[in-house]
Amino acid sequence: MSQDGKTEKIFNSYEVFVIAILSLLQFTVILDFMVLSPLGAILMDTLHVTTSQFGLVVSAYAFSAGGAGLLTAGFADKFDRKKLLLFFYTGFIIGTILCAIAPSYPLLLGARIITGIFGGVIGSVSFAIITDLFKMEVRGRVMGFVQMSFAASQVLGLPIGLILANRFGWHAPFWMIAGAGTILGLVMMAKLKPVDNHLHLKTEHNAFQHLFHTLTRPDYAKAFFATTLLATGGFMLMPFGSAYSIHNLGITLDELPLIYLITGMFSIFFGPLTGKLSDKIGKFNIFCIGSVLSILMVGIYTHLGITPLWELITLNVILFIGISSRMIASSALLTAVPDAKDRGAFMSVNASTQQISGGIASIIAGLIVVQTSSGKLERYDILGYVVIGSMLLAVVMLYYLNRRVQQKMQTYKDV
Image (cartoon, rainbow, N blue to C red):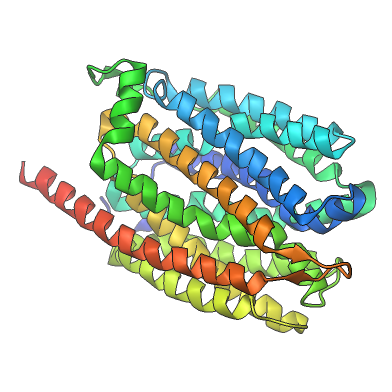
């Protein structure tokens, strides 16, 4: 490994390509989910749906993704990860096209289920590839770049998506995602090498035994519970973010792209920096710092009234820096939990746990939050308290997981 200060030599050219392709892939999948948040205000008006119905659109993706991940988990370590990735990404693009042509709420709901079935597995396969190809010492950096796709989707995708939605209707952003995804899929097919070293590792489990073993192993179960807590925050706050900004904080629909743009630009800058710091000073330490920032900002954000644009942008920037720090550090830490022969299954179950937990959280959020006849959202502050509680519990769970990972790494060093 290169000495500190020579970060340009840490990765070879192919590894840089893999990081770039996985980052772009995550960008399209995350954008497909995140674009629903800013489109929420438009969809609720255009399709005449309630907050609970809109919450169901979000959670339908999550539940179908979670179910698909569980069904795939037992087989995830039985195939070349490149082939698995291409199969599910093709299905994701087809599902996104169905969203683009959906004329009504029921058909949109069905399209989201199909998209979730395929899209929900992509992240777990990507993380398994990262764990296969990159050492733990540099995984924070890799996760920093890959998770930067959240920020990139704000800087590039969400503003463009909102502009397209405002000019051509809410279907347009889905066409944009499907077009970009098709090009990316062709590049992956041509340039990505097979990822199949795990196929040479012997295991006594068949597919169903492999899944059962992964679900019941104690240290894996603790990781899945931590993921449940980590998923709660984003799935509870994000779906109603645009409606809350417009109806409660006094922001106009035309100002929303600017908020996402500036917030995303800061997140893009801090993402790789956070990843590098997590490799240097410890992934759990960065997670704790991000959690403190997030808890403070959620407490403030969910109690706001009419707010000047510059103030809301400042709060959003700090909040997303905190959230991305938690995501990057926890993702890198969780990759060290499974044994090599269990990586695909573990990542699939972990992704399913995240999606199902998020789906439940989204439904609960839709039941907690009530939209009045004027459009204003009530009880958003209660949502904030629930999110803060889950963040505090997540810190406790990550503490124990971090201890387990440190012991595991020390054991390998001593062998």
